[in-house]
Image (cartoon, rainbow, N blue to C red; front, top):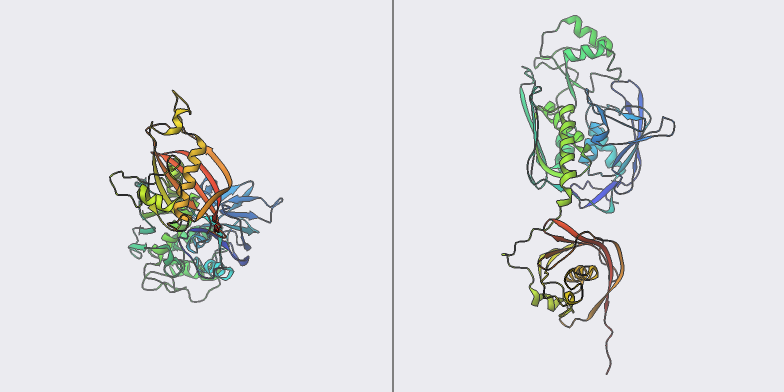
Length: 474
């Protein structure tokens, strides 16, 4: 179990234990209990309405958003859950990818109006690393969203981490123009999660008149007073919320609470952006710039990002090959690593080598010996030799360095092998092997992919065993 918060992790994460939290729904006024439970890899964030017949579930996904008025609401399979954004942001901020959220009401509790209480219970449960790789989508160009009517502008820029800048401007003499920034998601807990939701006094009156905030409390929202109000209006608010001595401060904020940051409203808008963009459904890295964001715009932007990722994610992970760049290992260095020789050495050079990934190149020419019989007049590289080329590439990563070639490697299993396109003379194969688990007792589990250009031609999951040769006694 991991006790510390790990952000931008290589592997997916869930909770180490289940944890509960209770509170009041801000609009319904109902007492709500939610239980956060560990979930299997690739589950995502799923809500379950345990108060409904059959206990239906709804996945936290932008495709399931049905309403964005003052909060974000999702619905599917007859299960509807609203005000999910603060909890969603907390899960992202704590690095939780997979969780089942049991809830016994249609609304996530508002608590103190921030994300801090959710962060506290998540940390109480602990974070558990899972045996599944977390694959991020990396943007290659800008994705933008504009709503001229609301004067909203949002853009996602290519960036190597998850970074967000927000700007709010409500033409309010009290709030003015505010800016907030999150340089790295690891700052979420201390810099963003404590920031509470806010509303304007005149909005509060409208909501009360329409019976929309039955669970509202002057302690779970910053109330901004930027227009003249009467003593009678303030007195009415005091009676409704059963608070004494409610008054407007010189700064134009009700005296219900002190600001935690001078730009707390802008920081809360940034919190909402994190929660709503979590509904994209794919982990991605980008620099988000949001001018005048709101739930409606956030969700529309999330839809645009998801659509882009779905169209382009197949291109993710394609190695970049520059023939003019010197290789890390040429064919002679490869011969010192592998026991294979002509005509069975199927790797020409290595262009990338880390602890977990190796990328090699195989130039396929008409002079390959196997083309004499496979097939004359219709040359096609045998699929089994493509898999062998992947295996040799994996050996460069996993076989111990030994000039005497004192190790043999044997296939144990080949799973999920797919041949998607033919390999013919003139093709340059980019062979990528990724280590799925640490090598134990000589057992290597790797995912292999062969690219020609930006097309995947072959992929397979390979398991092999490295065995030291027995000593020959003379």
